[in-house]
Length: 358
Figure 1 (tube, rainbow, N blue to C red):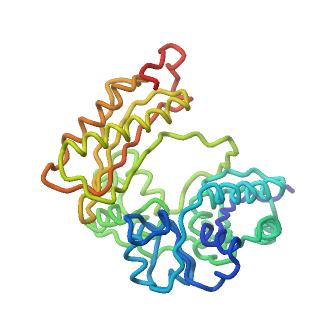
Figure 2 (cartoon, helix red, strand yellow):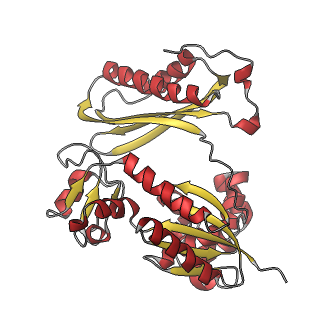
């Protein structure tokens, strides 16, 4: 009889902070915060924090200045992306060495496709392989699909293993708030709450028509399935393909005029376009992110008339979005994302010369 197939979700514990502690053993046990250039007087956000810093309420995305106030004796370090990339590659190589399919999700997490009669034992072997190769600790969620495996990992942290399947889904998740689901953020949970849907069980029991009416035919059905813990169980080791490229800048001094904002957007859009040129795929949508002072964030998107490899078209779309911003508000952050046609959707690049290269 063949071993049962499982999906395992491997997540490195406090990955970035852990890499920094390995490089600086004297920091072990101390509150460590990583973000920006490591200067809390500058505008930047927390990339990650050690568990010791999290105990004080510090979390990813928090302004670095606020994090420093919460933990005055914290060690604040600059982001060192090459170091994290190198550590991540070592982790993924260790997982591939186990002879299973590995789907990389980012620096610090991956799905494994495993056939085993004892998935907990396999999970422990994965943790041991990572620890031996990198001295980094990890947590593993075991599920009968990706949704359940991903959510299970949170119950295993730190350094643990947890199984979440159809058999115990409602026992574990039923009474929990919808925001605890993978893919449900604060905005979605508030929209659900407006329909008296506050828990996972209530989401599972909600009429699909109500969800479709609120979120549309695709996402409404998806949220209905999510409430029941349904999802794909296929682990794919095909190389990850970027859907788009983004460039973002937090300005140390607020941009105060529409002219300053337009100039900044033009520069960011041009940089994002350059990234898409290296991909060799056309752009079909442009998104502009703005953070007004003091800390209100908004996004605006524009679908282009057709996929394009013309720099001027992409930049013009971003500028058009910039013209829709509130000219009376000061801007502290801008970001431009250029979303590309995926390879399986057809690639007109071979038929259309790329224009506007520097």
